[in-house]
Length: 93
Image (cartoon, rainbow, N blue to C red):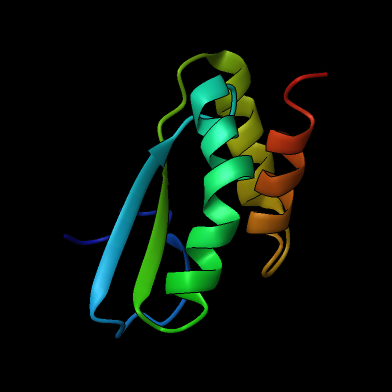
């Protein structure tokens, strides 16, 4: 699989033995729950240890999710994932 024109947003070592691809919408309550409850432990156990390379692919379900992912993608440098964290954190508000 090759990245689209915008490129991949990923964490970890691209040479890791496993690749995990998540399709998520920033307005999806199930995606938000995974991000807050499951992802931190997954990241610590697999991404941070070099066992997995994690790719987040946007799958916006509505106009607000499209705007949110555009905002995250416009963030400078390595700020994409911190912005995604913030948007999921604020989703309930």
